[in-house]
Image (cartoon, rainbow, N blue to C red; front, side, top):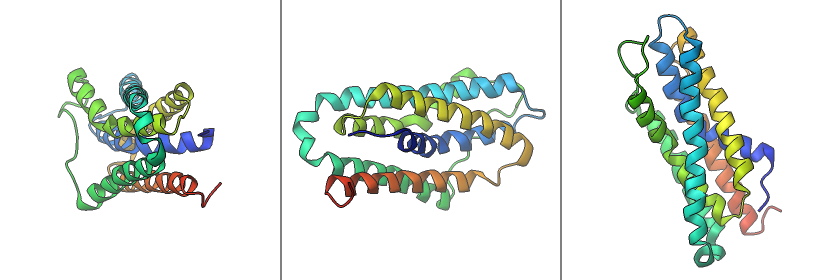
Length: 193
């Protein structure tokens, strides 16, 4: 299946909303914006958002012959589940990852854990990419760069405007993932071309 730039960009935006929300919290902890820290945070989140779909794609490629006939259903279920979970947790009000109390220092171990936690969803997307035979290199570049830019922006926004966007960002990301999953399903069953 060929996915264009717009679809991959929207997947990147959808996947990056958790990282965006955490980046806002990181920005909230900075008394004054530290652009070096913003770039490091963006690098962690963007890097893991690119790595995890690759890992999922590599794993999914091993199982492709067994599930080719239902790949569009798998894609829909995974994306709808991930997106629905994001919307639910945002509405329910989950844990806030506000980082260390001292906003002037970056805890690299904490960033590593946050980057993994916010990119687990991207692993499932990577599995979906394998089933749909999506070209992985352009996909992970677009997803990684999109997350990097959005995360750096999140740090800046968090520092400037506070936490009022966190919940809305997670809801928007969840809805984007559900809609992309629905589009894939409708294409797979022949309703959309």
